[in-house]
Length: 216
Image (cartoon, rainbow, N blue to C red; front, side):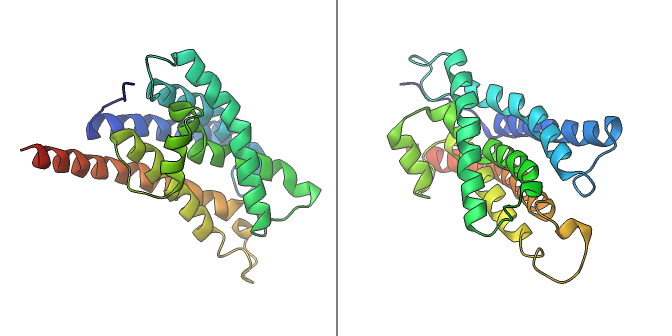
């Protein structure tokens, strides 16, 4: 079983492409459709998801864990299957934690859950597939054992923590439009995800340095 071994610079470049997908979605929604998260959250989230999905699936399929037994096409298929599965998990979790469930909120909730799936579930689905051991290691919050694990876990945890922090202003009586679901939660998730993508190459660099020190 051959694991993808890349450096901090390559990890930063791959994360930059993912960030570029989000930036493209923002640009398209603002320039071509004159929408934003505050004025039109559901259409904006849909555009962000459409722009980000192919970037995430293609890049992390290239980083698939077992190159010898899993083709690139199979890894892409795993990402496509993982997208709605991860969306269901994220939607269930956010509803349990208090997200509104009225019919008028469902389009925004669906697209937000799809975007969160791209941040959290889809990359691991492309890389690991159905490997129970790898999923257990990621979900157990144990220290990542290799470079790709850092690329998966740090941005995903950043998105989850950012979404949680972003939800704090929602119940406050400020009467601001950005307090509506899921606007501030989306901003928090994206900010946390981007911070995680910036931070993971630093951890990768330290991880490789630690390995070199041990071998010497």
